Image (cartoon, rainbow, N blue to C red; front, side, top):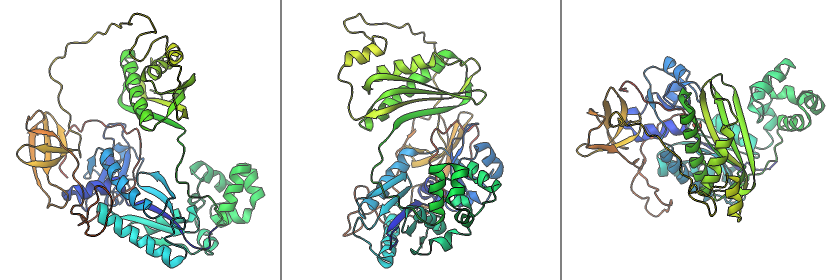
Length: 490
């Protein structure tokens, strides 16, 4: 434990929804919910205005619509959020070489390692400068917690929300933690919390008084001992700059259960392609191919196959995933599929022939070594007509006449667009045919503009911030997004 509050925890305020409110002037101060809009979608982030109705992240989207029927419901724009996150992480990197990102909108920083703080006053000053720089660079607000440990810094940032800074002076840990619920401690989820409640422990002080032996008896050696130390305010976990990835995976939840075996196999091949793309982008290869299948009755099965050596070859991963699919009964329907690669390494197997042999003797282009090409018969149904373009609510568009805007909703052959930009006044709404040749997908516009004189904030950084809009944390992967059947006018 440190004698000075030099561990900082940053949590951007309602990140996804705040970014949407900042980029869409008509949504500022209004309830905004970001997530999958299909029947099985979940809430990724709810703005603070939406939270007043009881909406929160990970809630089924159908329940959110019942609680807040007049909110704006938007499909996530992950590339946009990632670009903002990169700006924030650059600012954190300017404070210290020890930055531990937890998600797109959350990270720990060791201020002492960066030489920017060594006591309470310098730590508070560094935290306030960071909040000001984030606002100037992104137009969004973040909450900062400062303490002598990671656990307490995170607790402090929760107390600071929204758009604030909280500092826990070293030496006050026991007094602060004592009356709080056991759920505030890392590693205490609903199941552990209920187990402790049945044992008569509901507050952190109850855990401290119970003693280590009793917690070990209830929860096991590792968990019980760790929880007792945290209940006493002790947490010596260091800020780790880089975490080694253990696996790379992708998954999709489908709005309607899949029954067609050919369609299911095609989805697995598509997921394998995305997984390999992420694997290569991370500079890794892997030995174990994993298939995840959630069936119609919510039962989830995983199957895996370990290769002789690591690979990042699409053909190898695709073939292995296909073989694993053959061992799963999908006759009742499939609601989720996932493909992953684990056992990661920083190199690929040099014996490419051996890897090809593992994939049924085929190389990535579908041919065996020295063999004639393998030709698969593909039956393609004649299309009944041109596919209707899908316009996702919240996504950016550009019209040849009216300029930049975003989709409010679409359905029945029409798409409704509001034409406005970050920093502008709320814009006008117009409706077009979904196949209007003058309407096309657009790029996300920066939230702030004009470089700050005399200060280098890195690529893409700007000033003159748009007034930030408060919203809620996001990051739910695998969102099920489906078309919005009726135009929505927030």
